[in-house]
Amino acid sequence: MDGNRCEIEKVLVSEEEIDSITTRIAAEIDRDYAGEDCQLVLLCILKGSIVFMGDLMKKVTVPLEIDCMKVSSYGAGTQTTGNVNIHLDLLRPDIDKCDILIIEDIIDSGVTLSYLKKYLIGKGAKSVRTCTLLDKPSRRKVEFTPDYCGTEIPDEFVVGYGLDYDEKYRALPYVGVLHPSVYSKE
Ligand code: IMP
Ligand code: MG
Image 1: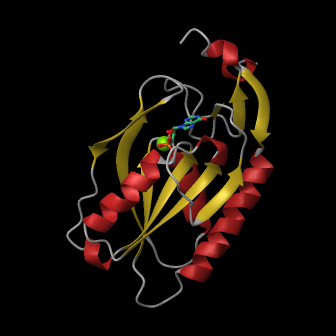
Image 2: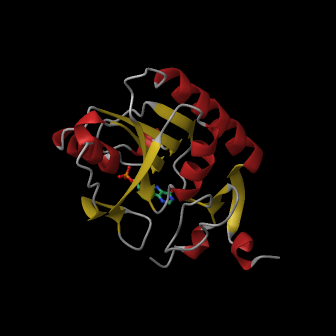
């Protein structure tokens, strides 16, 4: 058995559930960005959203472009630092024409997405909405509601389907709860 999987306490969102989530959200995006004057840009927040973004973009049928930003609010562990650092910025001369949909893996404190949304509006984006696969509403430090949400989850540290702990577990095909013994030495 794959060593990674032994450290997963339980599967929280299965491959089948993720598949129906991406199908549903893609249909919502198709409905909301159907206008001819839309210039939809799916903005992948590296690295955690790579897998979700890849699956979701294949199911969206309206014309779209993709872009990436790399930000961090976490250090190596399981707690947010509360500060957002931009490691890779969005550099587009046509940002005033872009309808940006930020694709995030998970919302926890809300700090990252509320900062990013304000940041992109401040850069002059035509519109900015947010989409997350997972939401932990009980963990909010700042008020934030995403426009598109895969599923709400309880306050547990999860990995897989792009999400990591200390850069590991990203390639698991499902979202699982990490066994606390893995990070209890933090
Ligand atoms: P926020 O700024 O606190 O909302 O944090 C959002 C970011 O924290 C996400 O993009 C993830 O990178 C990370 N994060 C939050 N909760 C988890 C988790 O349970 N597993 C893995 N990463 C997480
Ligand atoms: Mg992330």
